[in-house]
Length: 88
Image (tube, rainbow, N blue to C red; front, side, top):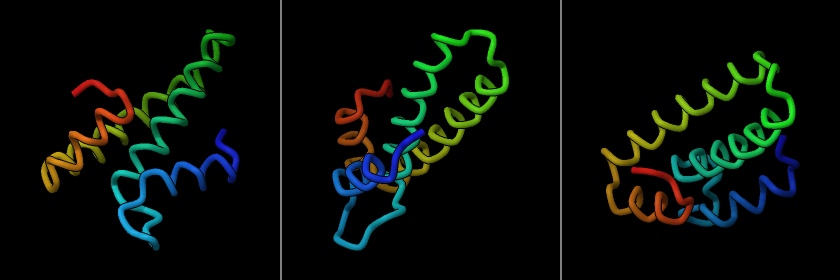
């Protein structure tokens, strides 16, 4: 789970303007960090199917946000994919 300090740092890194706290870029970045941490957890606990289901839901949610971003702002989408190291 992300601590509030890590979350604030991610928000600061990906915000589009000063008061931005929930844009699609931020949502994708937060979900990506959560997914990475959950993958590490599942490597240690391979039989944790409850967390695996949560991981699949997070991946699907990130895909919906990134598809929306790709449709509305393709430049921002390509920059975000490059910055996060995601597959297109």
